[in-house]
Image (cartoon, rainbow, N blue to C red; front, side, top):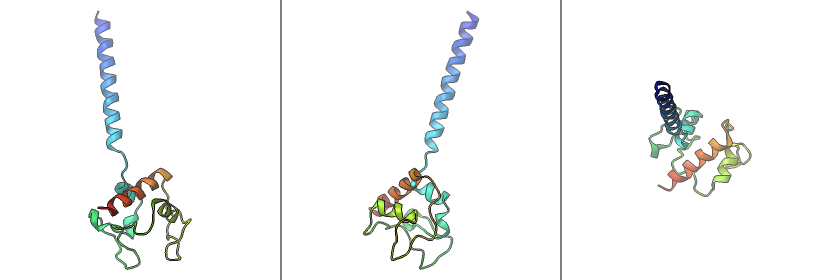
Length: 115
């Protein structure tokens, strides 16, 4: 009987640990904003509507609060991969994250551009 109770307690403990790990992983989900910041895009660009300031202020590095005027997500994904040009220029730095992260970040820009 003691072994049975110990086994049940062990199973419950393992279950609780599993639930905790799943909740932690979910809370660590990447957002467009965290990807933007982690990719060091703030070195050149700010997003004033989100309270993000560029580390370097320059007219060459526009605020990205209203990024999507005249372009769609596919364009910006290609632009950030240096596969497309904007004003006859490629983006100076290719995005180095995963395609999934790039899509998440671009979708975030599209969402905040509509606000």
